[in-house]
Amino acid sequence: MKKWAISYIVAFIVLVSVGVGEESIRGFRVVDSVKLEGKVPRGYGKVFVEAGRENNIDPVFLAAISAHESGHWKSRIARQKNNWMGLMSRKGPKRFETPRESIFYAAKLLNRKPFQGRNTLSEIAPIYCAKSPKYWESSVIHWERELQER
Image (cartoon, rainbow, N blue to C red; front, side, top):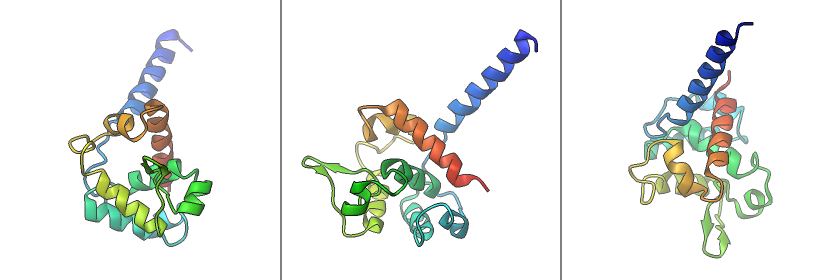
């Protein structure tokens, strides 16, 4: 294959991957909660959709953040503290009564300072995960793609 063709393909892949990270997480995207239900823990497809609708946040991105932060909903913190969104307090990981509560808390948090006015993952990443924002962003994008696949 010619060098220019390879360069074109690589440039296209980079543009596509950068473009995904620049999608706004703001604005409710209509999502079939039944299809999402097949990709998230049972009973929670509708929770992500509901939290997204109430807070004008894309429910697939909420679910993607949750998948990343909770180790695909299997981490010790996700199981023992019902913290599916990786939320921290000064004392460490926050505890919630239910995973649903952590999802709604995070959705509301994304509309307040310091997230207010930041609409893309690349703008949110340094706040949500100050230690490794690029890794966080790429992982959330990966999960977003996984959760959207038909």
